[in-house]
Amino acid sequence: MASLTHKRSWTGSPTSYDFDLDTEPMSKRTRTDEEVEEMLEPESPGSSEQSVELSYEQQKPVRDEAYYMQDGSCVLRVENTLFNIHRTVLAKDNSLFSSMFELPQGEHETEGLTDDCPIILQGDTVQEFRHLLWVLYAL
Image (tube, one colour):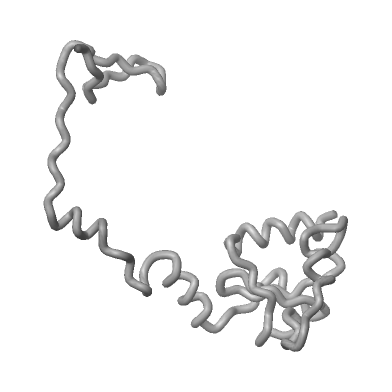
């Protein structure tokens, strides 16, 4: 039976390869018991994504040079950066922020009013959020 191997030669196009169909494929090496045990072990609590989130929460946040405005009305934290921007800009056009600002706060301190109690946004980088703000303030 003919099978593909990793023998390739470039023919001028970045996506075209010549494959040798007459040779047997190279076999993979067998995993050792230690490698299998390592893969089955649960991740430790201070590893991967969780440790990144904790490190941002533990660090003292810094104010963004461009979008921490003295007359801003809403303090947001993205990663380790604080943004003080205008709620009206964020709430334009019935956006997600508009809905978020209308939610009742309950008995807790209202988020977004001070640097000590910002609204924390997760899932975006500081650079991505700056790009969003650039677009919103440009409109």
